[in-house]
Length: 93
Image 1 (spheres, rainbow, N blue to C red):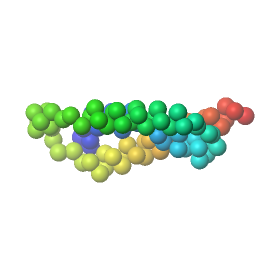
Image 2: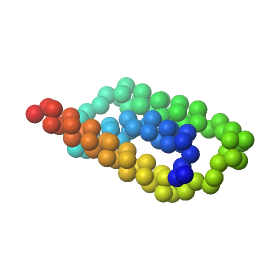
Image 3: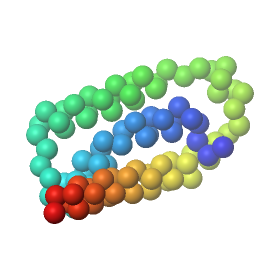
Image 4: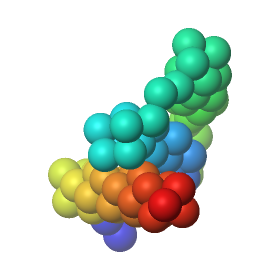
């Protein structure tokens, strides 16, 4: 086990952040303040929701390798963001 499943779901749920960043960098897209605000609220809500931990469940699980797990998640999100930005660029041509 690399990271706990709830943490993986939390990271993948915040996929909008790298998609917007890569879209701005590579796709030259512009987002409105409302879009940034909504993404921020969604990510904030997910983080707050995930702060409640079950002590009984965490005692039963093996020690995860957090550095490796979050590194994999970061690389995955970076590729997801780049792929989405590149697809938008191709579709606009």
